[in-house]
Length: 200
Image (cartoon, rainbow, N blue to C red; front, side, top):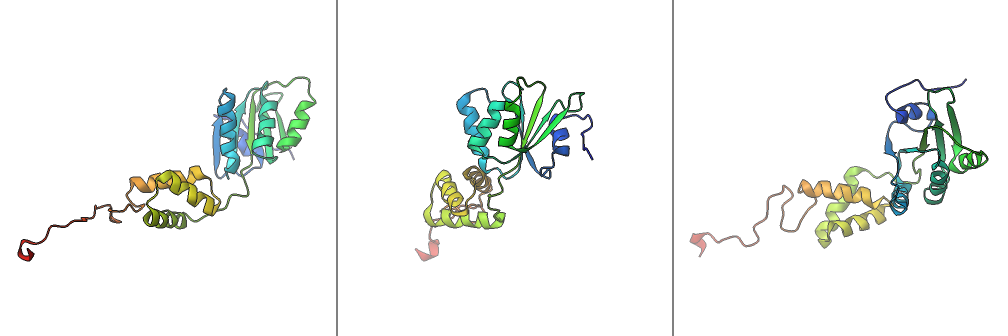
């Protein structure tokens, strides 16, 4: 039985609904930057993204995008939805490399392209409370800058550094990460309390 999408407000959602990839949580990237360095840098960052990633791309650059994905993100499960809900609708499923091979055989590729890439299955799931506890402990022990702190905790748990740094920033805003001289409730500790006049 063939499963096809119905017209909707977004090609991304229409493609996701028939992709067969996890849809409970996803990341919508849209069109990648035209700048080559920015484009490759973003794809490199997405390597450890555990959610389904959704791209838009022009038919002229879809082959190049698939090549970059295989090289930077790995040959993971991918779905290409082309010309969704139109007369020449096509949905290709397989690994990024398999879809790349199929497209490479075509003299021309036409139509709007929505590309969905499965998330990284090797990302280690860590309980958020455990992550926060690790950030507090190392910050109190070493009083390191947030960037260095995030780098160490990310390496220790095998997590994306960007994710850990974001969590550290949120905790820092809430004054719950644990700064020397700051109580856990956010009140500054008095390191040099004045003596009671009666004790002088």
